[in-house]
Image 1 (cartoon, protein in one colour):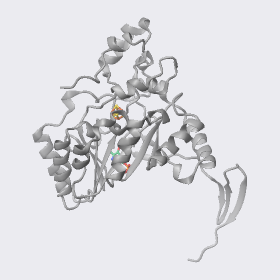
Image 2 (image 1 turned 90 degrees about the horizontal axis):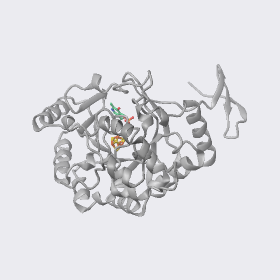
Image 3 (image 1 turned 180 degrees about the vertical axis):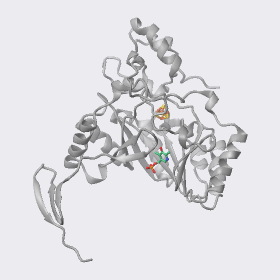
Amino acid sequence: MKKKSIRTLNEIAQQNLIPQTDFLELKKVVDTFSLTISDQMLQLIDKNNPNDPIAQQFIPSKEELNISQTELQDPIADAAHTPVKGIVHRHADRCLFKLAYACAVYCRFCFRKEKIGNAAETISPQELKNAYNYIRSHSEIWEVILTGGDPLMLKPAFLKKILINLATIQHIEVLRIHTRIPIVDSLKINTEMLDALKCGKPVYIIIHANHPKEFSNEAIQAIAQLVDAGIPLLSQTVLLKNINDNIDVLGQLMRCFIKNRIKPYYLHHADLVKGTSHFRTSIKKGQTLLKELRARFSGICQPTYVLDLPGGFGKVPIHSNYILSTQETEYCIEDHNGDAHAYSDIYKN
Ligand SMILES: *Cc1c(COP(=O)(O)O)cnc(C)c1O
Ligand code: SF4
């Protein structure tokens, strides 16, 4: 087993990435949510910057011990929508398929923080069969979304087998993979992996990145290989306080996606995960940022800002409204400069 990228707290401390005085408290933190940083991400950290956006995402902090009243064990109620192990089926036409709980990095704000890195959560061969059977017997499922953990942590041969098995189910028309690997451990995107992604049905990949600094040369190359192999790429980002909750950073991040042929898809409002309040912004702040993004950056740089409602009610767009008021067919609509305009909705029935 290659253990290279699993960091111990000692290792992090030796590299002066955490204050020595915090060691014992941080030990408690990593006992509940493991610590892993890929070499690639570790090398990007600027130790002279106390607010380094890479360090903030992956180096544990004692603020993780602050658990607020409203933070939840299962923030988006996956458990309530799990008919068989590994499957989350909330929306009729698509389901999540969680194969492994390992990642190349453990993001300190992860929405599945409670489960990630837990070997007991890994799916067994029998459970895998049950999951296939569930998908096969539910013909309303049109799309299967591989998530986890990080599905690209799986061995390419195993991933290929899974994709092919899913692709042979007639009603499954689209496969989707959510991953951070192309950005945090780019060399895993090799010819074997590219081959594994060819399964006879369209595979979409959603790339998770939160800061322009994550786009190293290796990452840019891995992404180019995926697009050149004909795989459509979309993005997802978590809105994170002091990391990307600023219009210049957010705008540059969206431009990085577009420049690298990744279409911005979702900007997530940070979920109510235990011990993540230091990462959370207000919705109001998020809405202002999205308005500025709309006003200053290209239309293709625009993600949808979503909140995953606690209780398992799904993701809902939470942009501010450009329609200021309506009276019958008379609308008052705000433009990007904040000026209001009257509009009469004239149409034929
Ligand atoms: C996020 C999520 C999906 C995917 O939602 P899209 O809006 O299609 O990206 C599907 N199922 C569950 C349970 C989810 O949490
Ligand atoms: S890579 Fe994704 S699943 Fe893994 S810790 Fe980060 S956010 Fe969570």
